Length: 234
Image 1 (cartoon, rainbow, N blue to C red):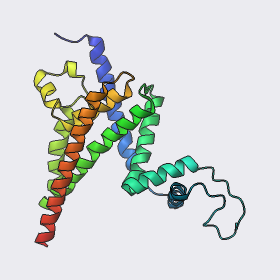
Image 2 (image 1 turned 60 degrees about the vertical axis):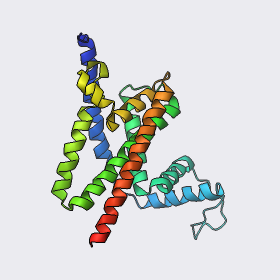
Image 3 (image 1 turned 120 degrees about the vertical axis):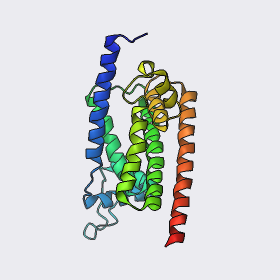
Image 4 (image 1 turned 90 degrees about the vertical axis):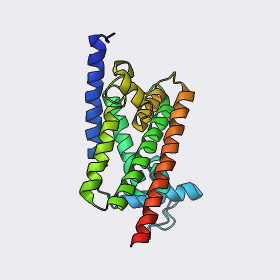
């Protein structure tokens, strides 16, 4: 049984949008920090630690002159991201905001609300961390840049194409559909998409997030073992 041509066209359009978003992601991830950024991070950390200040504690010339900080929400977000994940957290926050805004411009409507967007970002983080850890483990083991790049692409690209990123599960051959059930990329994509809908099956979402969490822990353990092995060899 074949899907109607209209559904094929819809999923082709979604695939094109996914490619565009991927390009935007890599462009947005290129970051040149403005010197003021670290001041905003510091102000946000002060707010989280002791509340909103009434004067600028880092200004020599203003003294006790009242100070109204008009960038509270941004600075709190910067501080929370930096405290949790360091500089990569700031890059991730920027990329997330760019992609969410671009999605709105392209006509996306996040029916799951703030919770759905938060779950989507959590799924992305739980997918990025283990692949980053496994890349580090490969780098510490192979110790050759070309080999690491080849190995990562050899694993990551098939995982992307054997997931629901570009094709609806109903349109997949059965064997690809079965593989996607065991695919971390498929877990992240399926859980993130479901969370953005207002009528998500939250038990299924939680199950996939749990699987991603387990994958993250396993990858972190492998990266730690690889680092320990590297230390013993030098």
